[in-house]
Length: 323
Image 1: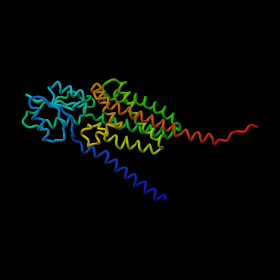
Image 2: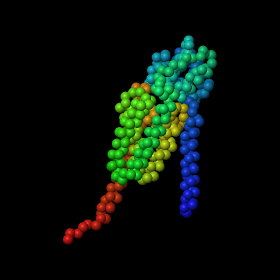
Image 3: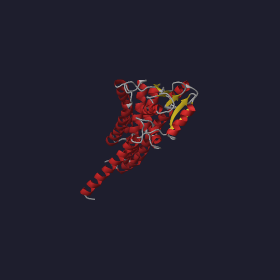
Image 4: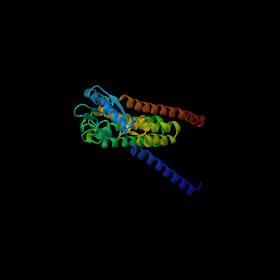
């Protein structure tokens, strides 16, 4: 293949990657709508409200009837539902903008459309941070965490020849990155409430999982692992992380798949710890720990792969003859 042919081929490949990235990021954003979104209803008109919601869109909501308003608030606090409609007298819509400002907005709008009832009052029972009421800052912080992890993994892979040394650099990045990123997010910008050290530990785990995926795959299968990690984390993980919406608002099954990748797990874990006292934190924490463990396992495979080559090189070295 000539230089001209290679240039044209690389240009076409780059255009194809650009098209795929546009689809990956734009398609989910233009298909945001409830898909079996869990909400609670309670009160004397609960059955009627459930029927109206089902008639509005049969697949939109996973409707759960609870005993009373206290039970509805408890379900929201436990992250079992995103909101609730309380009937009887003046209807009330309970939302939790901390769980998802996008869902809170949709629930408020849908409740206003319920026929046969007075206009409901809307109460935000677990509000987003007052410095980030629309969740814009929260959603914007997930991509930098992922991209910085990719960048760190690439630099460690390309510049550090020793795989054990890459592991040391990975650990250093995770600790320093977690502390520094949360000093900005939680301290300076005040986007997340809660314990600084706990949030920093989560950010460090996310950094380790993302950068470790790059370093581990590259150690195990070569530099092609860098591209594979970028596809998993950036091309799939970020647009389907639901950091700016909710997994139940994304096209199926991508909302679920996004929660199994580091960006989506990071967003869910940070929300649970910062706003919901750790409710439903176990799932995303497990996902991140599995990715971190997989990174360590891949580094181990890389070390084992490099040993035969090192041993062969040692055997080929001439033995000095005394004399």
